[in-house]
Length: 258
Length: 255
Image 1: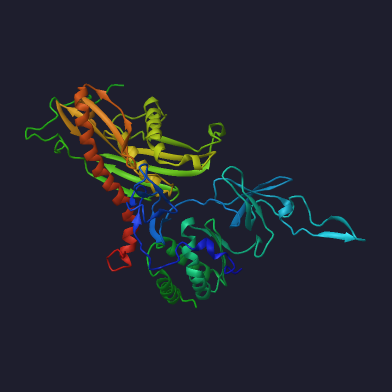
Image 2 (image 1 turned 90 degrees about the horizontal axis):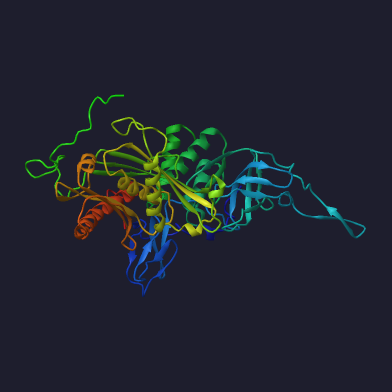
């Protein structure tokens, strides 16, 4: 249940703590110097092409000569390779329909729910192993899945074959604002390591804004949920990691847990 | 049913000291209070108090379109639902959406569409629900202003915000931001909205008697008022985050 294996490239956004933290809103002019700067993520050139304007409410960040806006609010757009927590809402003999907190439901086909291996008898391939019907999971199950295909028009497709993927029958799933997920991970996983060490919980953070967690007892789990909610609320402030360790230590004393 | 109190308008819409009935100058706006992120169950929300108007706006999306035949294969759609509460006006308003509500929903949709990137979300819809809790003139302008704010709060990519205000003519004088009585008893009423990324007029309606030569004066006055409203919108959007930032930086926003 480790999160360290997650591709850190996806979570680069909040990397540098001490970066410029200018709050910008849609339509705000970021710069009029279009010779030295290029519009990056969350920005656009205006019609006369002499100004770079922001598209989102977020924080302005300059990397090299690109001006980016890191959004503070937004919705989840599925991308291939993302790990997501899915809830099965419907199934029929050929596929499951899953809620992944995106605009469309995702599809999970039975062939993607087991590892493909061929049985060889006398050197000839006889048949596939595994069941190709939708018997394995039932409606209401929580799965940790990976997106194998997603685009603007079609429903995303999921797989449960891979490391850490599959059904979760215990633990708690909470959901937070999607743009604040990078902050829960922290710079190269610093925040999530801190949370794990201090609350002794297993955590799995996914890109669609859902977090699976399981601790020793309910008190630890409650503390972790409160801590994550605090991170969500204060995602745009500086020095959050230090403040969080302080907060958890204080709360532990207050609640009488160790 | 007999009306207990008749709808009567005062003969003069100006006081003896030259100010308007509610004590405002000609170019003065009513007091405006804006707040964002107040509804927990909506993706984005905003609340506005503009004089006696009290309006909530909630945004959902992008999500599936119901009924499904409204969905477009090449772009998303924006749907605005403007509704007035039964208790929002003096006489009880019938709760069913009438001609006026459908019209205002439509004009707000057309007004907000140019700032959104609907072509990026084919087959989906963005839904804006505007509820007028208390009405006192100029609700279509107030609704446009608050709807733009709610869209920005939802994190939907926008080219800019949209601001809106009404300009009118009462007792032969041009005034900004008409109240309920001035709207009904006055001579002319011209609601307009602006999209700030290209400074184009996005909404322009007209009702009453006016000289065409006066249109320029009307629009000039409107733009000054709109700039004032735009500043308030920016402050409302930022203040939600800045208060938290200030709390942890000793009262100062760290740059």
